[in-house]
Length: 465
Image 1 (tube, rainbow, N blue to C red):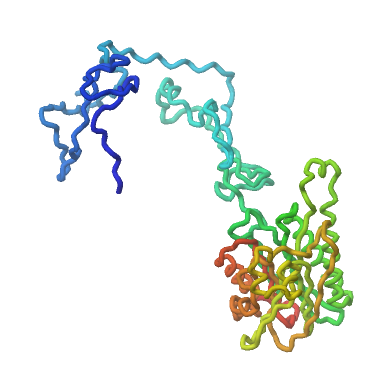
Image 2 (cartoon, rainbow, N blue to C red; image 1 turned 180 degrees about the vertical axis):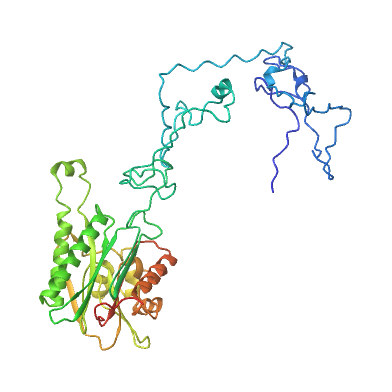
């Protein structure tokens, strides 16, 4: 353990901080008598090994009195109450008596000011003390053991309708998400979300680097006109460079999910229902850009809200996927000896380079422009082109619907299959949690959202074990 350096001699005047030279007896600036400066104590232990305190040679310290001779404790004096002289030989003057506090009208004391948030600057010194003034307590004297004064009312907590701090359990949470009592930042509702609807489940997490979760999902189950079950999952990823990306993803996922769950029972073909659901999501995101003219004038640099979308519909014998952007769908068969597959193609710069034959997939996705998307939902999108595809798998498996926050850590279909638990078909919620944990363990640089749908869709009422 490091030691603090010891001062070998007095280098500055204790009174005016004027530099001194060796051998000076008086300060050349203020005339301070340097002979009264105590010598540096010797480097000797305060306590001996056996616990006794050795007295310095030549000093006969008086024994402290335990009482005043009448059985009462010896009186305690403050330093200013004892006689003495200053460095110039003048007697010490007692300190002036404390000024009486200004009179105030009778009534209950004002409650202490609420705590401050951690991200606010320090409060100025002229703010009133939170603790009682000790001088006033000394003047009043000790309170009797059973004073008849009215009890001090306990500080009232926040009303029942207000959100209470998760840290101190007493403070009210302000509009910015901070506790007004202790300043603790409150977790947002969307920081971590989980939902299970029959055999389909989804998990979304803020990740380890982003300040909020800009992903959203919608899952559900329904029944086709012939009574066959159908599972639905929609996953949306807000475009961070756009305005209100979290609102965009939430609006798109809700609109698409409601559209699918409404169209499938009416007999709409799942692939057509997916196409219509993407258009419904696009309209919902476009509506977010309809702001008053004054709002656009005050923030002309803001662009339209935007997000990507990917979804899947699973029935007893059909698998339909749809997407706009770079979120993906993977197929992982229950028999892991058979190969998995990726069922979507990214709307991204890297995918365009690979499709044009200009770069290999490894080269394209290693480029810093790889994740620049070329398709999205939003009022400033070039031309909406929903992608849909239908598959008829010949064996059971699990459909993985996810954002790039997951597939960045399991990009190939083989890596995704390896990260997913073997029992994901019967425990989809557990499987989704494991996949989110895989992304967080890898670094969690982005929001992570994944939904799992077992294929074929099991009968209604079947869910996670």
